[in-house]
View (cartoon, one colour):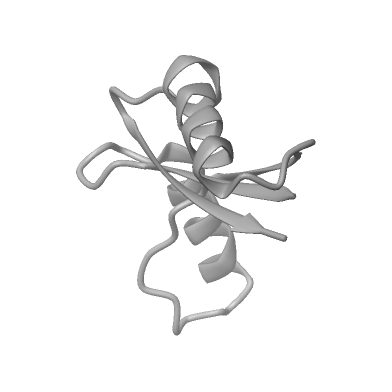
Length: 80
């Protein structure tokens, strides 16, 4: 089973990397972009077929190491 974890900054947290990308896009004349938020994606290959256990394990991974839950949110997608 594969777990896809998308991590992004919480609303209200300044995204300096997103601002830099937004500025660069404007400099390159992409004027239809009103905001940019940059995040990260982590793909884990899990040796289990138990979705409940997989979600529990990946949630624990996110809470302990994959995301800084003070300033970041995460979403987990499980793929068979």
